[in-house]
Amino acid sequence: MVAKILVASVSFCNFSIKQKPGEILKEAGIEIDISDKGKALTETELLSVIEKYDGIIVGTDPMTPKVIQEGKNLKIIAKNGVGYDNIDLKAATAQHVYVTFTPGAVEQTVADSTFAMIFALARNIVLGNIAVRKGEWPRIIGTDVSKKKLGIIGLGRIGKNVVMRSTGFNMDVYAYDPLIDAAFCEKYGVYSVDLDTVFKTCDIVTVHAPLMESTRHIVNQRTLSLMKPDSILINTARGELVDEQALYDALKEKKIAGAAIDVFSKEPPARDNPLFELENIILTPHIAGYSSDTLLASGMMVAESIVATLKGEIPPYVVNKELISK
Ligand code: NAD
Image 1 (cartoon, rainbow, N blue to C red):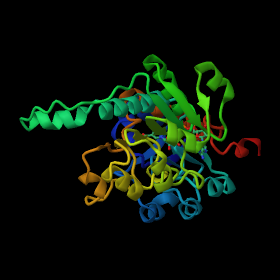
Image 2: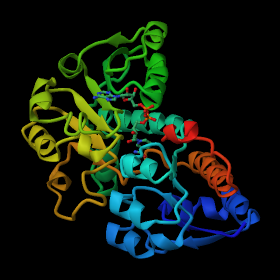
Image 3: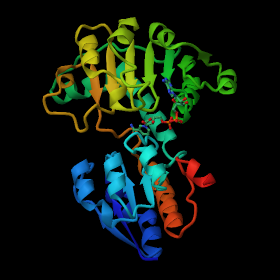
Image 4: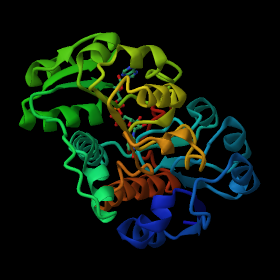
């Protein structure tokens, strides 16, 4: 097989390429260029190289209509993850380029991270760690997580895994999803409610919706103002789901007690991002889905999709399914 791919996904470059997924690609005879940038490529960088490649493995790199049109030889855009909002599906489909993703690989890990963030906030783990290292001994009073009301915005693969974990903590779960899975709610005793009810009722609100026009700034000044003063917000989905300025104001004015966010409107965030000033927020560098187990599983799915496509077969894990029926 004489085909050439670009690996832009940072996690694939740093991890998966050195493991079994990398071996599978090499054994298939694929020529592989690896980005050495250590972060997502820009549109300009992609435009200058994309024409050379039959396939690309992306993380959050912007696969805009311009980039896809310039990629005249592209047959596949393989997302190493599940959030494919950085890929213009319409442009890819129009050009008969498969867009694939890795459902099933990451939801356990993100759900685990969500609970890690909930506990870190509720029990002041991060503040306590910083204080002890400074020689301080503040006996900070936390709150319980057990028996609290948990609100989930977006009850998909990750949201459901969060629900499953919550059962061990005897939590009441409220969920908003326009395409709610009623059978799942019935099975796990989840209350299916409207969006405002989630914000008004819950002690912990966690966001797991994809980024779309309808979800951009779904957490905003108005919805934050509905939350209780002792409530907390978790965002492991996408930065643009939360209006960062409104979140800053709500935390600064103690309208909510705390937040933990793994994702930002701009990644990495600017050094002068005002959220850095606040003590009542935990910030992590988009690692909620990063575990060696997940990266291996996800990398295997990417490698399978690339090899199948470049052999002229229909890849598994296709997002733009219209192409399969064409
Ligand atoms: P999914 O597609 O299985 O679930 C998303 C759910 O959101 C669906 O049930 C959908 O109906 C619902 N939804 C759509 N519009 C909505 C709206 N307006 N309000 C509320 N819910 C709405 O996706 P998933 O696998 O659960 O992943 C969710 C998101 O998590 C991804 O899109 C991605 O952006 C993000 N993610 C982040 C990381 C990370 O490392 N931080 C890793 C993986 C995924």
